[in-house]
Amino acid sequence: MNKLFRYLFSLILFITSIGVYCSNRLMYMKKKDEHFIINRETEAGRFDPISYENLEKQEITIPSPFGYDLKAILVEPFKTNKYIIISHGVTENKTSSVKYLNMFLERGFNGIIYDHRRHGESGGKTTSFGFYEKYDLKQIVDWLRKEKGEDILLGMHGESMGAATMILYAGGIEDVADFYIADCPFSDFKEQVDYLVKHEIKLPGKIFIPIADIFLRARARYSIKDVSPISVIDKIKSPMLFIHSEKDDFILPQMTQKLFDKKNGPKKLFYATEGFHAQSYNENKEIYEQVIDDFLKEFVQIV
Image (tube, rainbow, N blue to C red):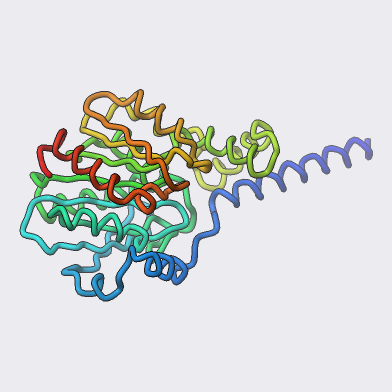
């Protein structure tokens, strides 16, 4: 009996250790240092501190429905009804979104960049890869439409987790934007985690994911299977541009292909030839912008 008890105790301890470790890796994914992001973007010529400081903008604080504040910047140099909301990827912050903001400013848009929960200056204790973030995005949209009117021409751009969040919001909550641009999203979080476990840890995901999911449900109150853009993409009717790098080995381009295939209504797909994950714009700037111009002209009737 004592031997059986010790065996069961060891098994429970092992499972608990695996569950805590795996759920910690997801909930508290290591973020990039703010100064590192600023230096990286500045050295690459994608962020000019002086030009950014001189932009006509205001800092805004928007309450999350989960009890923390979301920190955002409204950049509004134009008297226009065209607005873009930009969502950054996991481990990044709103400084990473400035390059996309500048691109849309050049096209006559005003814009909002913001920090996801647990990123940058926003509150929140855990990352949920779009599950809770989609409700925060709704708060950003609601604030903008209340302040500027529901008749604004609204676009959204998301990168990586930000793109998945955007799809989960538009397909799972409300499809209110006039267009969406999804840059390197994952199609299903369970598949993404399984892929990363197999290729980075060299272990079968089917062993660890169910354990991690149990602990995630208990600790963060959501399931891995709840984070599935592919399950809601067909509910989005507004035009969507999908972008992915052919060489992306973090989130595979096949995930974007699956999303594109299932999306109903107006859509366009662009595979960048250079760059790895979330590098399509950085490594293919001219063609990236041309693709967006063509998309806006074809589906939104603006250049």
